[in-house]
Length: 107
Image (cartoon, rainbow, N blue to C red; front, top):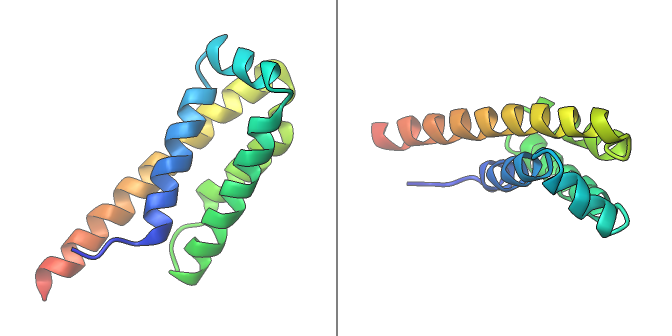
């Protein structure tokens, strides 16, 4: 089974976004680390975007993640955006993985 790097990064960034979207827990950690996780997530979303473009996969999850990283410092908006980003990225990762399995099993 051939895995794609963009799919792996979507799983990772989607999981992290889901964690940051947990009320009070994610926000407390982000504030405690002086918004550093938002910068790390911005870099991860850009890397995911580059790999998704190279592999001709959906890029909207990464774009939403980039917007989330830029607006995540706004307390309640950030939490909602993290949850939305997580949902979109995890659905994209699932679809990419399912598509890859179907393609590989045909050969």
